[in-house]
Length: 58
Image 1: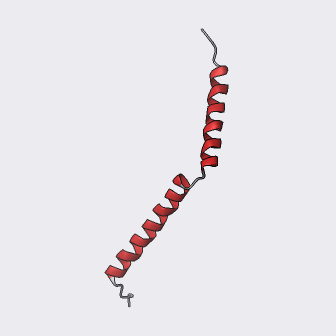
Image 2: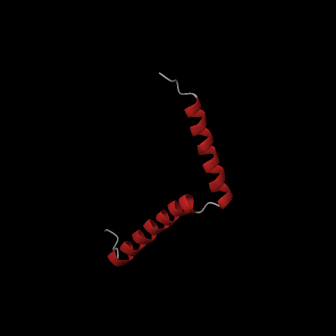
Image 3: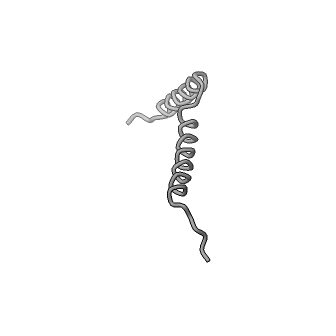
């Protein structure tokens, strides 16, 4: 016999799992310290300056 599943509970469990996954993604994207953001911006600026400096003029 198949197991009887309460659809309301299954729906709520799925929503909780989806919300947890979204929260994890938000923590990765927005949960950085100011120092980490500044260091990342400095690294990006350094890479762009290095790339611009390597361009050839035609």
